[in-house]
Image 1 (tube, rainbow, N blue to C red):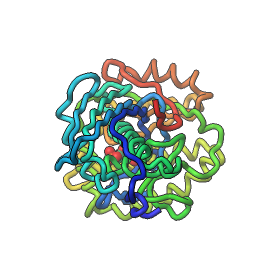
Image 2 (tube, helix red, strand yellow; image 1 turned 60 degrees about the vertical axis):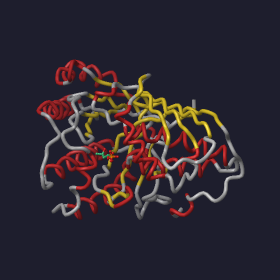
Image 3 (cartoon, rainbow, N blue to C red; image 1 turned 180 degrees about the horizontal axis):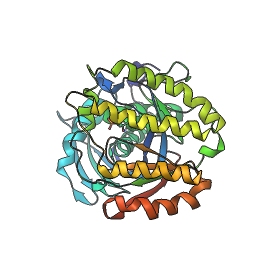
Length: 360
Ligand code: PMV
């Protein structure tokens, strides 16, 4: 599908007012997106597990104004309180998507949003937050164009989410999503995420992700800045090529359920992401001493126990501990006993692979 397909033609219906609510999950990348071109086009394809427990619920109420205004008009309520600091982000998002949703200036919106996880947890809420809002706006567009197919609805929701935050394009569907054009993944696109189209072994169904909150502080370097540092990065080309190769490799791993190869690939991707940060100009480190403690303990425990626990990281110090459901009775007690000491106040979130966004 080309960009032009997302430009609406004429709407057949009108809608004066209404409201809609979507709950959209976060996701954790197995093969990481790091580096982008203009308009949130990724420099390499990525693949993620959609999560279940970490989610944003957004209610969008809309009222048609007597005449279209010159600017967007909306109120933002975060966890029950007016939150003007979040408004610039939403304003920028509206500017980026107005071309594709030309009715935006015709309505006044009230956006009421809340997260299932604490805002200050260091868990990025942009993927779940932007996708939840994009889905609400798509529900309004569907009112104006009721013949829209379910397939198009999801694709455009992912397309719009991407313009809010790249990784948000992977939060519409479950349980595994690919975003970014990859030669050997049929239907893959830089414009939107697609449900992983090939065979997945049962071991990856209901995979566990226990998220260890190592550092809940504000990140010193935002993802936007980090992505931009991949321009002129000395290892950029090798990294982007490697991501393509890894996406090819993960296909047989997912099909065969080869956990040893899964572990090597996923941990290498996490460390490569952070290696890119450490070799940027300027360089930076988002891991904390406790991140490394946790990684070392996971390695030691894996060797001693013969389990398949592994880790991945996002752009921060927190650790996602991944393991198959059938090992939970061995791995979770280990996490409680040995890893929670390295989290702020023992905080962690028990999550698992989920099945995508849902309309409330
Ligand atoms: O969607 P952004 O711009 O916040 O970038 C997310 C980048 C990583 O989380 C580090 C990797 C990924 O693929 O999700």
